[in-house]
Length: 107
Image (cartoon, rainbow, N blue to C red; front, top):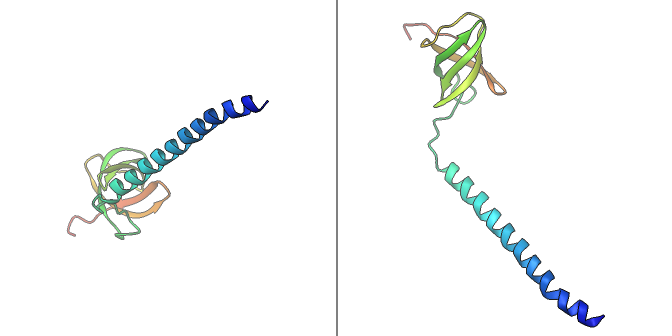
């Protein structure tokens, strides 16, 4: 009985070492990824942070469509119909959807 217990110990120690090494590698990747993303420029600010960013309509149908804001494509809603290429202003962000309105050409 003692021999079986002693022989099993190195296998358990090896498995524990592999699990620990995997956890350390995982943490290193997660922390490295976060550091890499934290170094990006801060141009991804929408509505609440800027209070009315101007964005460009890329696709539109009825009261909904897509706009390009902060270098990304966002779902959007508006009270009035819009056309691709039109510049609009963000009124507010509702989750992952931007509420937009037409801008005045003079401003």
